[in-house]
Length: 342
Ligand code: CUA
Image (cartoon, helix red, strand yellow):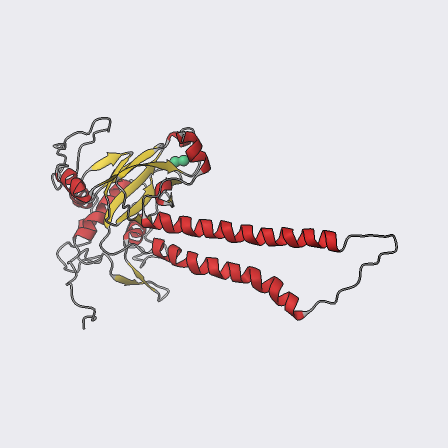
């Protein structure tokens, strides 16, 4: 079949299990609503015929409502909604909780391109390479306006917001090339803000990543792939270390666990921080970024009057590099059995 016709008539490729589940729910909703509509139409037609006016003297009898009718009219649609919810909510919850072992990739939307950075690995523009069959978590932000990262084949769409991190994740299981679109109108070349997701067999991906100058700042020893923009590979963590020193962060935050003016950065990532409101939050990427950009905000553990704001001083990718550096200072958790430590 003609490719255009196929794309008009059918849903996009399914590149993950999640995509198949979303389509399953989609078809289930379509089929159940069509059956419900058929039932309504059939009843209406039956009533048109059965109760049609035959003579001028016909009088429509008054029918007293019965409780059983109410139960059916309310209960049946409710039952449909509840079944959809029971199928859809676990899918939604799954999309909100990336697995612990997911590989992180930073995504930055910018008029009008997508930039990707692998922690400790290469950067790329518009081409996102991922291993098949392994979970990938995307930490998404924007350099300018709101964009939306959209991969139809994964059924994943997530807004990219300036000054904030959003996240999503996927586990693509079919090697191939899939389109990445921007799904939020962002100016003149919005429609051209198209990237490509390249799902590679896992071993091939490992080989590719190994040739990308992992851990070597500024090196460019990767083999260029024809038709793909080549960018110098750089180490995000090293970049973060350099920026942290340059911006004076390390005057207040230690990287050896000792307490200084501010909290040490060792094991800061994922630590539970107490807010003024008494609530406790986990210091994730969004939290750390917010602490840098808006330390007076009440959603961070206000070191007001002490911690300066870096709004306007650090571009989002620079803040992201510092966050990666902080993450690298986390002592790996000891893998123990299912029991909790003391
Ligand atoms: Cu970016 Cu539309």
